[in-house]
Length: 290
Image (tube, rainbow, N blue to C red; front, side, top):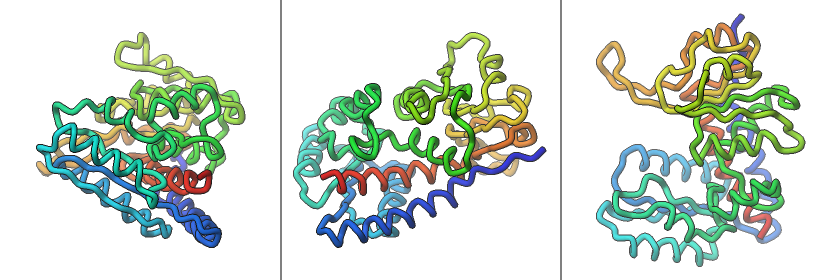
């Protein structure tokens, strides 16, 4: 058996085409969605990721503004930039690219974001709405990666009602909010949230109909752990040295899992593009709500 590929690149392209049509309709009503990004420092990966977000916006007709601060920017500088983005009339949603430089309190900065403009869906107010079951298109932004995972499952008609889901990783950007999202009415899964201290992790994964790996350990999930016919989504990513001595990016899931699973979302090329598409969706939906 060879698993059906949950193609995040192709699905994200479809979503962006749908968003482009929605942006046209909003502009006809005098509503202009706009993305803002705040990047502090010179991390190459962060610069590449932010540039990709601006390209995504250009593709769907969303204008964007970018604030880049040097690596030696102070907390006061960052607070001032956040205040400018909160007040900017042409920004309907924005993100603070993480990580921030050492010495700047990340949580303190994230809490300064206007919850209505929180394009990442990670402000405490919006996470609280997710806990209450009221986050989403009509209310407040959802965290991008969990929303992208659910959207990918829906687009490929992977059954979620009553499904057992094993989420490996308890981070605030993926694991914790995904557990809340997958148990919502309409999705109706049963979620086990696993982490480094979980006992008999392998046994819990073997029970699962859907496995989401977001641990950040290369090839952690082995094929013998997977129930035949399960859906496996790889979210974690690690830079390793290849046989040719060159660095390459690999996911948390061993490639041979594809011979056991019915569906697989590989990494790179799976959930990552969906995360970016959901970011643009949050910006557009926020503009529509406003």
